[in-house]
Length: 60
Ligand code: SF4
Image 1 (cartoon, rainbow, N blue to C red):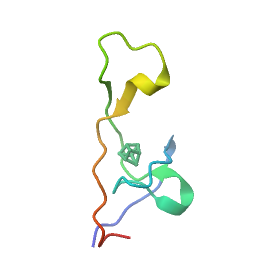
Image 2 (image 1 turned 180 degrees about the vertical axis):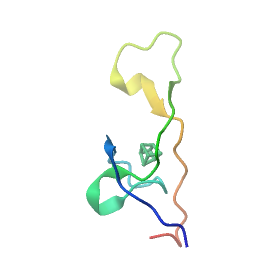
Image 3 (image 1 turned 135 degrees about the vertical axis):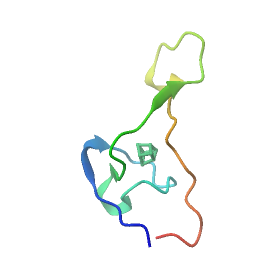
């Protein structure tokens, strides 16, 4: 079983990500990569967490 530790420096509400701590709204990774899908990002919606991994239905 994967042991996750809350990283209090990275808050995240993306509960569909397997790295999310779910009940606490924190990321469990030591660091993440943030990128963009836009050529000229202007608003937060232009950015992505590139460390996102979809949670499988068997993970809690
Ligand atoms: S990897 Fe990114 S999307 Fe996933 S919990 Fe961490 S910050 Fe959120």
